[in-house]
View 1 (cartoon, rainbow, N blue to C red):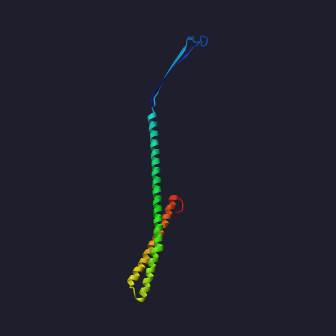
View 2: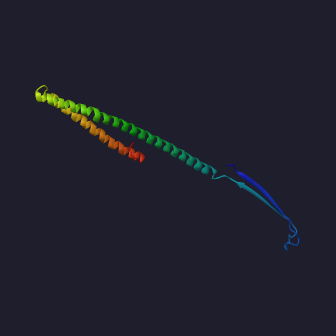
View 3: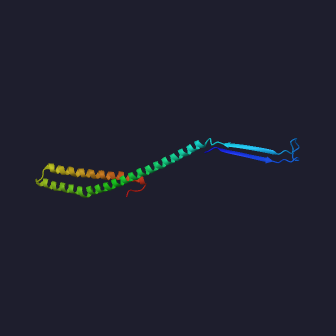
Amino acid sequence: ARPGFQVGAVWQVIDAGDSPADDAGRDALLFRVGLTLPVWGDANAGRVAAAQARQRAAQADLRAARQAWLAELRAVHAAWADRHRREGLLAHSLLPQAQGLLEMLRGDYAVGRAELGAVLDALTEVHDVQVALARAQADGVALRARWRALTAQEAP
């Protein structure tokens, strides 16, 4: 981006027989001087620097988007594992226990050894566990859809 300077000279020998003019036989001498100024150099350098800055910003945005995607994918995976564990606990442990307690209290109530309030409490417990199980299953559907949206694949 520095100015350039050129100097040149050309000497041409002209014979007396080459030219019918009055100056025939004289030699021709040509001088040339040139100066180049980098007028657009700063503007071009600024454009190049701006383009490079935009490229670095786009690459940083891409890295940030990849990290955000990966973090969301890990969060969905963790929520899926937690939901699966919770659904198993509700379906295979808490619901059978609550239903067994309700059946036992119904039998005790039938023979007069349990109060109606205890039977209703057990019935409420069964209902609460069933609602929690239904919510866990609905969460599973939502997580499966979110996983599919993130990866374009079925949930694991």
